[in-house]
Image (cartoon, rainbow, N blue to C red; front, top):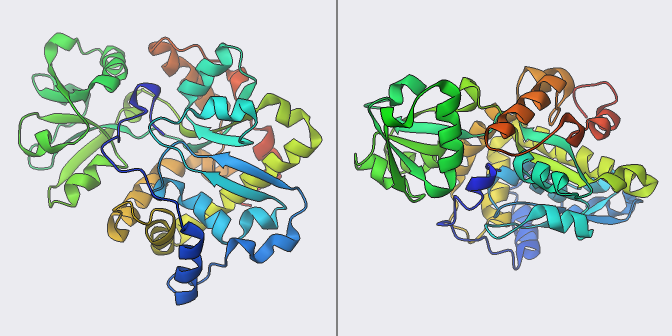
Length: 354
């Protein structure tokens, strides 16, 4: 998920309605539209580690496709664990929920979790979905902004919650704020389409598709690729869970299911999109073509040379150090000690796939 200042960047979207999701799953699976998937209870007999919850940090959409597949296809259960998926939203604070024990594992961001750890929370970051955070500058394809220097002399729409990170990025690339015009905007990117601004602080997994659905072509580039290096969608657990034999086994099982679910999502995007739209995000106004396009965007952020060598969610020492340095730009104290790959090491056992 987004950087801390951006936690409610999509408040204009409706929160997904989860009521009746189980019945909808059975109906959709029974119709054959989700061919290859089995109801989550199919492997219940294989479970031996009890039950646990995974706290998601946002409403139901394609960014949790791996979790949906792991639940629906019994991947968590095959690893021995009954996992409940807890929907998040703009008012969800994942870290306190994990600290309280209401969830075994949560999905958040390195900014929020680092701040919580620095304030004494018994937490540790155990994996990263997006190796590259999705923050980007978006412009119209007919008049693209080509890289940071291309913003000079232009009007850039920036939401209030993103202002701190945008100014930190400008400082990083050596562009004084006086060299461009920062225009306060909300989250709906219509002002870019209307020509009121030249560029837009966006998330590469979201706003380009909102405008694309209206037939408006855009160009984007990631802040990450110009030195603003952050993970996004990081998994966190209690440090004490890693030293408790039972809870550690549960964390390993949950992460194994997550990784297998995401491997399946990237192997079959149409299936992942159908599952998201027809079951978990049912009633949220989602459509399959857009969700599938967003999944391809996520795939580019999940899969890097690091994950090709070590597996999805992996965190290299170099990338962790880069995250720590980037967080310092916005006055968030972090440390390599706040991250660990010990759970992923146990999941992969030296391989790059589960």
